[in-house]
Image (cartoon, rainbow, N blue to C red; front, side):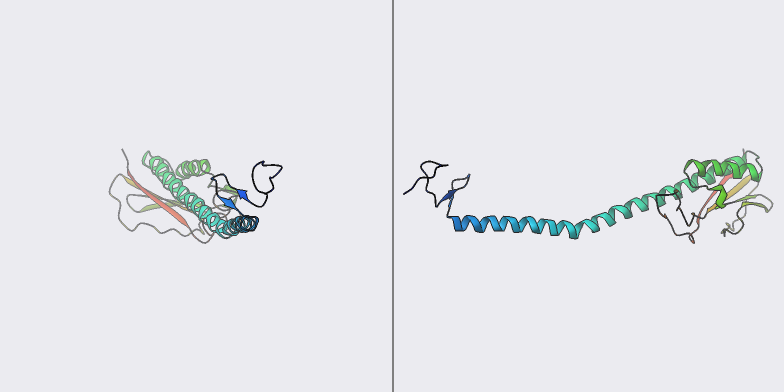
Length: 185
């Protein structure tokens, strides 16, 4: 029996693992091949699963951006209704709405992507902004002292709702709309 130069006292034709099992060179080579194959399998699994995980992640981000746009629009409608309830003109209401939308980077004045409809008692209705954006008005009648502000937003077809680099939150033919009703003090 010959001893190994690297491991005195052990046979050259046997390999010992850390837990004390002994393998012949043939078994050891087969185990190495299985380990190399399992590394390849892991790579294949990663290649197959990564696009799916990436799509789910990006869909979640897009959904969150859409919800942010809807919440910003609702906040803009509330700000406009406050301005209208305080006695502001339709232009002042549109400025208040524009400030809120600009804070969320949704209002792009050069593209005319917002329409504001201010309704007051007695059937007086004033529309400010892009008249081409369709608005679904609320058919219920207003009581005395109430004002209703409806804000419609058409996301930009080139840059999406959040500016360049973020893609489209919604398609350009989809109109986001929010309505707020307040009673004047």
